[in-house]
Image 1 (cartoon, one colour):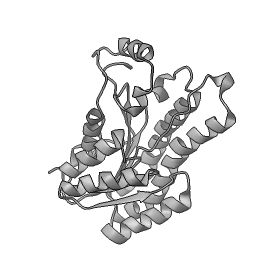
Image 2 (cartoon, one colour):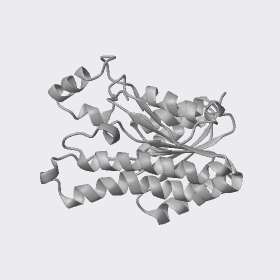
Image 3 (cartoon, rainbow, N blue to C red):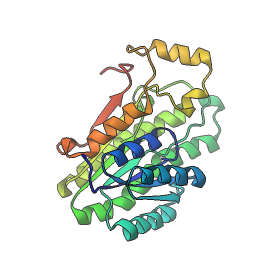
Length: 247
């Protein structure tokens, strides 16, 4: 097992990509902390982690509230005495054309996606600095690289996460803490299920591999970044999109 004895905090992990990351980590020996605004779903995922023979802790945490985040981190330390891995996955969309987008929808997406990532990274950096070890993985998006009509708030938040990842990597590297981002493309989740068939078809035309990605495709990259195989990788953004965006 690549992550035997590790403790991982995964935000927004009650469902979708976050849940798949947590399960993948647990299968590789990780005790997992499941944070989500949906308490019932978070508890369900935690029980699934325990079914795999690992310890789990769930919490209803609003990542936009630093006081909640800090209190949550202290609970993790009380239970596990350390945090080896942080995956900042919590995120939302509030799509609309720029000229129709409300200030409230702009603020909320930036607050959850970008400030939430900042809050969790800041709170977890102290115990990781004391440990002189840690892995921080931020879930960005190809939309933060290429932009997308109707997603000005989402693209700005994800581009911000990529920049934040680089600054975090530079600040924490001397203490053996790495920070990397994963930028998913068109992934088969509840979020993409809400799209019309026409929109889905158009997006698939942009994917050279001609299929949607699966949450496990993202989880497997996170698993690699969290493992010792990626100890010499930091400040990078790994695009997982079936070839949709090529540099």
